[in-house]
Structures are given as C-alpha cells and as structure tokens.
Image 1: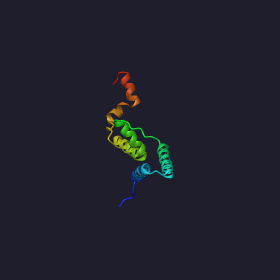
Image 2: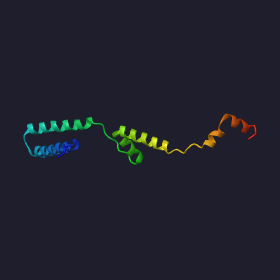
Image 3: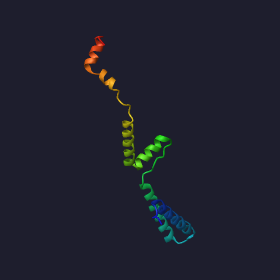
Image 4: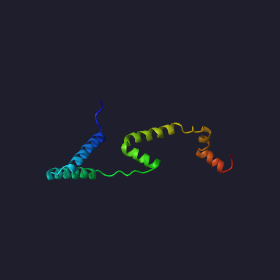
Length: 113
C-alpha cells in the first residue's frame, strides 16, 4: 500500500467539496449555505495562492520543465556528457605538435623547411 500523493488528497477534497455543494444547493438552511460559501471561498483562495504553471510546447519547453523539477540530476547528466565528449575527443597527432614548435614555425616562415 502506498501513501496518498498530494494530487490524490486534492481530488478527495474536491470530491468532498462537490458533494457538499450539491447537498448545500438542496438545503434551505441559511447557516449551511453560509458555511459552504466560506469553505468554497477558502478553497478558491488556496488555489489562487499557488503560482500558475505555464505550459509550453516543443522540446525546449520540455527540457526547461525537466530542469525546473530536477536541476541536480540534469547538472550531473550534463557533466557526464561533457566528460564523455572529452574522453572521445580525437587524439592529438604528435607530428602536428612537433610542427607547432616555435623554432619549426620560424624555419617554415623563412622558407627553409
């Protein structure tokens, strides 16, 4: 058995509120309707206090949303990717290193090599 997620708790509260609204609409007692109105207003204010999440489309929006949810995981993935690319870099040619020595470059520029 797993613990209920916040989403499940919200949906249970929504269902309970819907039932109370239906029963409150059928009720003729003013105390019930005022209490129900106060609860609905409280729920509405709680919903308004949370910032709205904008939903974008496309791969860039998907990556941004994933980054916002798990920044440390993405930082690790980027570092591993950088390390992998660094390990796969082409090997330096020793002959090219020798040609790049300052004395060899000066001989090349003077036309002696």
